[in-house]
Length: 197
Image (spheres, rainbow, N blue to C red):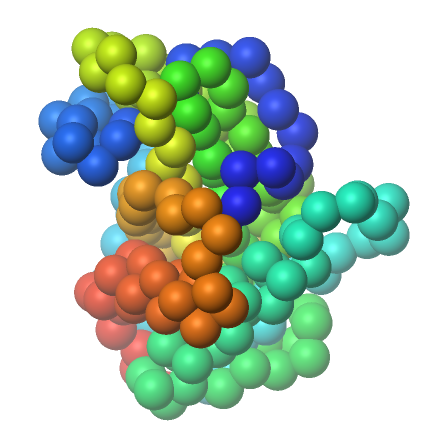
């Protein structure tokens, strides 16, 4: 995940790999103080297919956002297919998959919410990631990314599953290395997802 994407907000950064365990504890602890939880698990999900959030028309940006989305969606599709849940056309799945990418360094926090939709508090999740980074005493420059994945019932729009992962960002990884790292992050975020077909 490249740190040049999305809308930048002047905030303190996300956790580095050296302090991420401590800051993840803070992030989970903050979840109880807000209406937008960082984790949700309603148990096994009854579904036969999934689709990604349907996007409206958005302006094209001069960055590699399309490549990032393709890589994230490929990783999610691979993970869910292995669980017996195939990808359907946008808006046609029994469940909808939404994801939010948050990138931070020592000075800014960036959110890429093209496929997160308009509900369930994207800005609150970005604020939580920012607040977690604020407590860092690490004086060294760092960059880290957070991937939040939601599974939503496509009829009732009820949030069935939310989980996130935080990973350090590598500069200029090869396409293969980038895809492998994204797949590992997605697999970690969805490791407890149970599907009932």
